Amino acid sequence: MTHPYVPGFNQATMTDATLVRLVLDGDTAAFTTLVDRHAAACTRFATRMLGNREDAEDATQETFLRAYRSLARYEERQAFRTWLFQILINRCRTAAVRRQRQRRMFLVDDNAISLASVRPAADASDLRAELRRAIDALDPEQREAFLLKHVEQLSYDEMAAATGVGVSALKMRVKRACDRMQRLLREASDVGT
Amino acid sequence: MSEPDSPRWLDEITGELRREVPVRSAWRARLLEEVARAPKPSARDDIDDRFSDWQEISGHPERRRRSITLGPLAGLAAATLFVAIGAGITYTAMSSRAGSHQAQRAATATGPQLVSGAPSPVEREVVRFELSAPRASRVALVGSFNEWNPAATPLSRDPASGKWVVSLRLPPGRHVYAFVVDGDVTTDPAAPRAADDDFGSTNSVVFVSSPRT
Image (cartoon, rainbow over all chains, first blue to last red; front, side, top):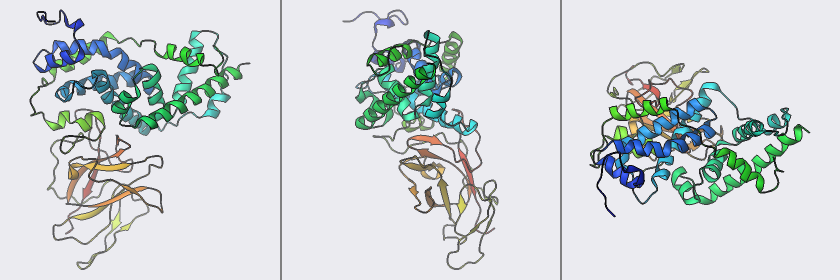
């Protein structure tokens, strides 16, 4: 199927791979389409991963800039989203380490969660607060695997490509994350009763 | 909220977590401005590795290509001679031309340490790098001296201290470096930091003195 190419006009129907080819051929407007397709998911992952919007926006911004500069290295056999997330994951890891060094933060542990006076989720905002605390309490590796699997819905093979971690290790991290989330959320709801 | 033990709990929380986080238009505009200012990417294979190296971008070892660079500072003064060794390090070198001697490490020493006072014929000094990273499974040293290749200089655990260590010979001058801890680039917490490069990466600095001083 072919149709006349009009810059910016019919890009909505093009695959990511096609858009990448257009950018490499000189149509930088095609990159805008790629940004608009993927920025929300990247921002969502980075926000959940880093816990604050500002760091997430910086990491996402840096991700797209690096993706743009290295676009020639994208290989079409891999989903563009997976390739992009590979960059984003590394940006988030670096940001987290940098922030840790700057603020000397410690991970919230289970005790801190259970001692907090948390009422059972009566409405959506309570649930969000509980979820945020529970997600933040996960080890970064577990949080990363959990978000990729259950929020961004990557396959384990895609997760392996994006994280550089083997599939079996990823499955273990996801399982442990789920177990821990369950426990933290149960304790949160128990405290209020 | 439903009982956490049932599978529904996962569906509920992932439903909440999958809620879209809206992209701010100001953020989008800023990004597109930066894209417009950036050099156009090309399918040609003459990309400047400092800007587009896959290891720097992805954090993963390069599978196909040659050496990796990680955000080095521009204009390293490789041949310049310095006297100071980092910040906070004091050492007493045993002064002798013959044989090898251990440099004494002062109680307040931080950062990489000179461990050999005797010059080799090529005037390189042995510098010991160490990092405390008890939960890491792999640590590598990357810097101007090994083309920022994380496969070139892995650290190993010192059984006595539990720290990750490596010693290598460096020529006199200023060297910029960082550690890669389980794929993540991090500066040496015990060493002075170099200025940020264009991409916000930070690196650590070690000065190796001329063996004549």
